[in-house]
Image 1 (tube, helix red, strand yellow):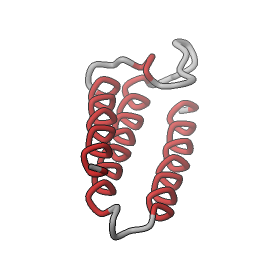
Image 2 (cartoon, helix red, strand yellow):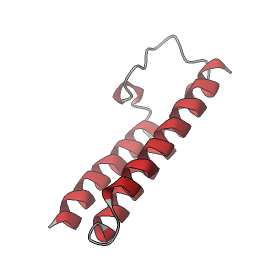
Image 3 (cartoon, rainbow, N blue to C red):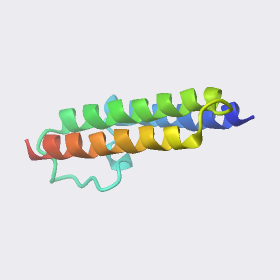
Image 4 (tube, rainbow, N blue to C red):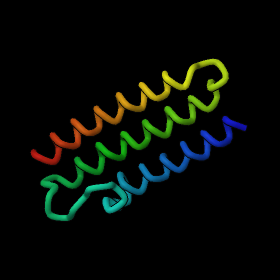
Amino acid sequence: MLAVIFSLIGFILILSSFLVWKKRMYFLIAGYSEGNVMNKEKFGRVNGIFLSLFGLITIGYGFVAHIIHIGIYIVCMLGAVMAQIILSYRVDKS
């Protein structure tokens, strides 16, 4: 049952990544405002890739949740979030 729940959440994240990256629905990203981003293509690509990564990590954890402690999942997600913040900030300023 846990795998189903995590898989649904992961697929929602992957769908969101498609909408941000390919369909350019940047309003789905928290904190996005129209005039602040210099390169919208790069900004959308970086955030779309990270949303896909979050979705894949979530789906993967759902299948190994009975083996791996939730702390490992949390550390992986926090590391990915920090990387996304740093790269989004760099893309935003370039």
